[in-house]
Image (cartoon, rainbow, N blue to C red; front, side):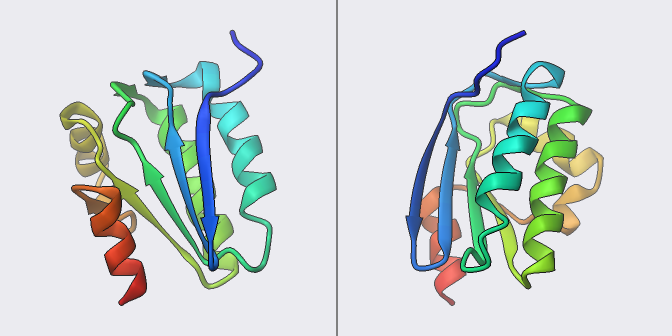
Length: 118
């Protein structure tokens, strides 16, 4: 189990774009991811998180749990999360669990950012 998580972060006008540079978002990194979300998303100026999932090849329930924590943190500040570029099997997991009802999925980061601006 690693004690770090690899990601890139860009903040601009209350919007955070986070690119998860992990091939697997499972129990080995979910706790670390929750910790990062807790630090980043408790800033009241942050209204939106665009989560770039393009590098993620596998996600399990603990990974989804971390993403749902980000959703709840943002909801408490009247913000929202947008998922960008999930690979096919990650997108299928989100859809099967019906989380796409509260976690909108976009084909690209640019598409998600365009929706944020509207």
